[in-house]
Length: 69
Image (cartoon, rainbow, N blue to C red; front, side):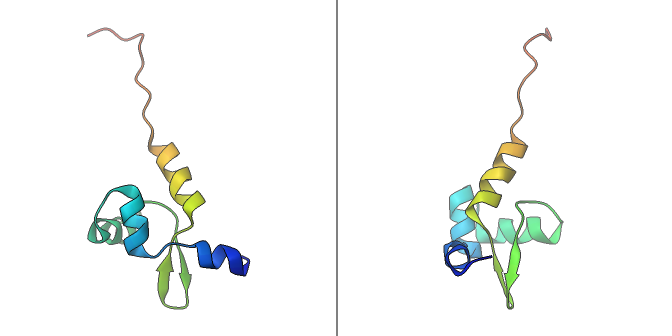
């Protein structure tokens, strides 16, 4: 990871804001092995923007329009 990528990495507060959740929610997801990929910078948890957007795309549910109620 280059220095530019490290500087562009988001802390928990910024990542949570981007996702529209609270930092505690993001921490809970992490403890449960859920949520976007993260990495450690020393002791600090960091999130890459691309990892967040990838995770969001993976959560997308496309309804099956062929099914009837």
